[in-house]
Length: 279
Image (cartoon, helix red, strand yellow):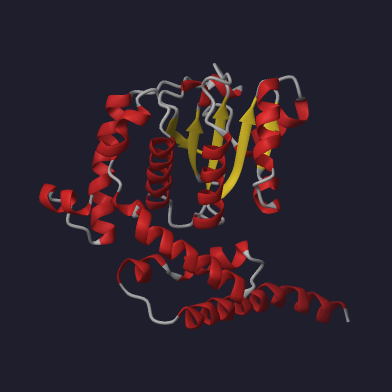
C-alpha cells in the first residue's frame, strides 16, 4: 500500500505536465491560424503563461491573448528602439541591473525619485521597451524577472499620476502575464501608502501577492529579501554591500547592441528609411 501511494505521488507531476500540454494544444487550436509576428509570439511558453494567468481556463486565456495580439499590433512594442526612449532613461529611473536574483532571473531597478519627464506616453514606452528587452535576454530556463524599487528622493512631485500607474499595471498584467516573479518596494515613505491604496484596486490578486514591502528595521521583510538576493550583489540602497551606479552612456551602448538582436529576432529591417516608414 505504501509503495503504491509513493508511486502515485511520483507520477503526479507527469500527469499534471501532460494535462498542461493538452491545454496548450487546446488553446492553440482555439486561436486558429496565426502568421507573422503573432505566430512568433505565440510559442508554447507564451500560451502557458496566458493559461496560468487565467487559471488554465482555455476560453478566458484565448480572450486575454487575442486582446494582447491586438495591442501588440497597434502599440508595436518590438519596434521601439532605444533612440526613441533614451531621454526617458537619462537619470536611471528604470534600468536593468548587472546582477540576477538567486534563481538566475534578470532584475529591473526602478527609482521613482529619479523621474525626469511629465510624459505619460514616454514613461510607458520606456518601460515597455525595457520589458521587451528583458524578455529577449531571459536565460533559457527562466520566464520571469524580479523588480527592485528604490524610493530614495521620492515625493509626490516625482511620482507618476495614478492614471499612468493604472495604464502601466494594465499593460503588465494583461500583456506580460507571469513575467513578474516578485517586486520589492524598499523602504517606501508614508506618502506612498496613499498612492498604493489608489493603485492596488487595479492589481489582480496574483499580482498583488508578488508585491513585497521591505523596511530596513523590519527583520522579517529584510530576511525575505535575502532569500531572493545575494547581499553581495544588492546595492546599498536595498540594504546590500554593492554600489549602484547608473552610467547612461554605457547603458545606451548596451541597449543599441540589443536593438540589433531585437530586429533580428523579429525579422525586422531596421534601416533608417524602413524605420521612418514604421513610425
